[in-house]
Image 1 (cartoon, rainbow, N blue to C red):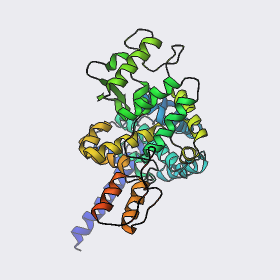
Image 2: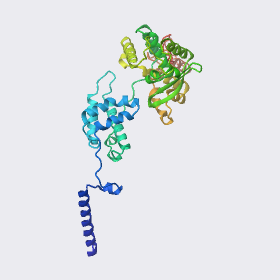
Image 3: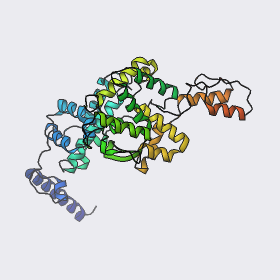
Image 4: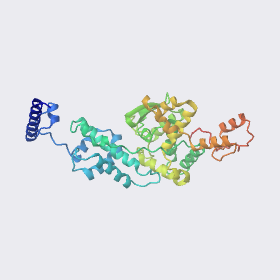
Length: 379
């Protein structure tokens, strides 16, 4: 290196040191200079206790219901902390504690869903904080934490025999069988979610064209075909129990009070108390959605099932696979066809009989009875 180069390098180092010292004295960062920001100190980020109420007011009711428990937990542990204080490692530790402390129920999956929801609740908070320019996109610690892998759902389509047993319990027990049977038929015909049935209003019922307007998660709306029998039953139900206001909820108790989630809880708790298999698998209304959508997909294809399910976004076409995966009965049928021996879970299915006959197999399959499954859920 020449003498001139050495002198220039020394001068550059001296200038950098002077500028760095001046920036520290003025409390100015290099990022503020690059972005043309003011030399005044940046306003501190709000605490979780200060900011979460604003997020609660901004989100949809569905998001509020999904995350409220986790926001409360964040307030209890981090309410005093600023949004820019937690690190990704701290969030990961928080999620792990949430997983370990999750309530252990019959259908628990190790607390993974609780950890996933906590991280999602934090990401929601930071999403709004970033939009309000309270933090920079690079300062979002929740975005750098990986969610636990979501486990495959254990729900699957119910055979007709199981659906018949559910209907029998609903019709012969409880303090309002007519209401319970109407709820079950509503779900079996429409494959709607619980919220879709509870939000159905009288003005959403088109008895002439036999349609019902369903409002479900994501603030989606869709017209769903229903049978003339169900359309007439819903209209009669409201005329007998409703208040005459077209904007009022259709499903109601005998005293005219609108039905809520508690009715669903009581209904399925009662069904599970009479049917041990339903209790073992924690069967609920969502199993009816799987049942109907599986039947539609098997008979009419994925495209129609996609529309039937209300998945309006074409990019989510694969979501239907959650509801139409092969059932245990279908696996048993494949085994029976492979070995040529009857299997108790495959008994009485017309397709098995047809394939066996065409293949020239000599195995004698048990004759189908009236309560055997034929793949068609109905009420």
